[in-house]
Image (cartoon, rainbow, N blue to C red; front, side, top):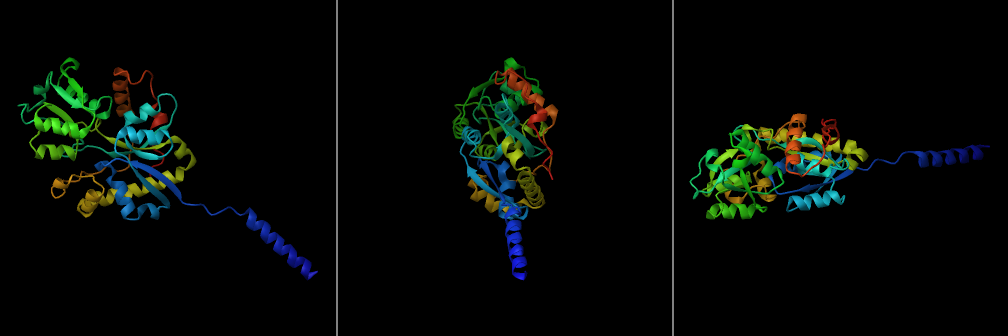
Length: 314
């Protein structure tokens, strides 16, 4: 009898063990990263062990360009990234594939994100001097959008705003320096490098933060499958943001190691304050949407509610 009871207990133990849920494995998120200052909170979160603290594993996938980034996302080889609402719209023009879940970097007074620069040889010093002047941009991107909106805010008409496609930033910098390009648009810190070499700052987006911000986005499929993992990622970003805003000088080595700031600027570059948890507004979304439709990049509306998701913020 005792032997029978013993066997029953063993069998029950085996059954219960088999039925017990397996220990959840930490979620791994692959993040496509361009060498831009916007990604600093991600690197700080990694260096400070904040991703591990919140139970998420993050793998960075370096990319050299926005098209390469978008190809990886489209192929499912990256889960999230830093991009712009325009990029999210283009992903979502037919079906919802991406969602913006947080601001990444947003210009504030004294810290622009995108700069309209004039060549030192052009003689241009203000927005009025840019009437009819070809401005080097990467067309169909946030850079062209910001350029047009900033100049419109300064009173220039659509007919007076001229842009020319110079897709590669190093080419834009070289042509500005040589004077072959009278004006061009660069993101910081490369804009700071260009001005240190003689370029003239005409305008930046710090007075119009509604145009020049970037966002953290994830594929909708990843959010649906691992909402807690994305929440953990964003909680770590929030802590990293607080650390940077409290004392950014602690992370100079990261700026260098990750190629976020050109070596000549490392000692003088001031890290911008990073935004605390929030997502783009519907008004910001709709303005960029209207611009994309004007340019023929989109033919229909793309839903703000489906494309911007603030529910995952800590």
